[in-house]
Length: 459
Ligand code: FUB
Image (cartoon, rainbow, N blue to C red):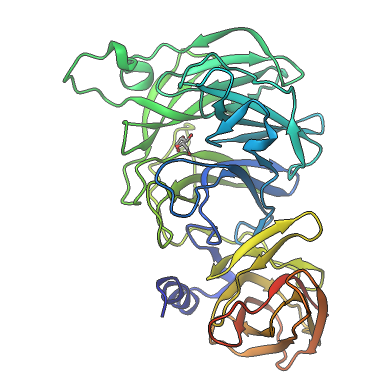
């Protein structure tokens, strides 16, 4: 039995469905990094980097987006932005952040600049949180040939002034014009001192002196209840997460201590983002905890926390359980197959015709959808859009665990191509009411890929 399978099976025995969670790391279909949450209406989006399988450095090619309405089921929106969308960039799709202003979505990213051979900050713009995005200005937003220019974090203050923070190992701040795609005035380098960031900037440190902490990279800048927060990866490598607070958006900053101390995560970097969503506060970070994970194969995770009464942070530790569901999923409308609380074995792919779909399905793989609300009557029919260039297989719809009661058994035929989609239906065999975790367990011939899976629905 695969490791992930054992963990998931145990968790379904131990956790009743009303306590449904998105297990950490909460994306299992590929490696994801540097999570940047953004709340837009009743949805929380997370923008990420993407570590390539088998990488020996941060050779990252694209950024990805995931969303949730309930904190347990995450929809994979694929990659709406990649290195090739910036004519002036050629490498290192590092830590992003997206913010909304006046109905437009501004996607700030660091990447390697062909123009100066350093890292530069770019900005793309789109009309929706999931893109498509395009380079907003056809040139870098900031590019001076320095390797410091990574990890942009943008926040729009109550008076409309937007601020951009970034940097490794120095921390910089610039004001943005209202257009969000140009810098107003000079770039300010924040003074680093023991009081503000735990230690002076690297070139000003006294050799062998032990400092309280030190700023490294990955700033996350925002305001809450009138206080400004700057969270960051600290301590060099391995990194922990620390923070500073201020009464003003441009400092002076006061070092406040560690939020996520060093954890046994298998990743020597950490990178955080914070969001309040539907009355809860969430801390996002990354680890190397997926199978085959590590320093260049990272995965995003989340924890719920409560601010202390004075607005300071509690200490937050990494958990395998992740965060609890704060809503249910309606199975009586089309649900994308790439909406999931956990998966084992499968991957996702995307193209212009179909969008994102679940692929690489083999015998025994499965997808878990958490806290599905069947109501009192229960469904009569289950259907799914599937495609197979080979012989297809079966979607077993299991309730509450991979071995749970079978609610339906959908035969998937060969359709003549991996992109030849057909909608197949089957009667529900077992009456299912109330809230349950649903497992789509895929079975068929051992060895080959069985089919692709685009969306599903109960009726
Ligand atoms: O993901 C590439 C780099 O690693 C990020 O820009 C840093 O914050 C660190 O997480």
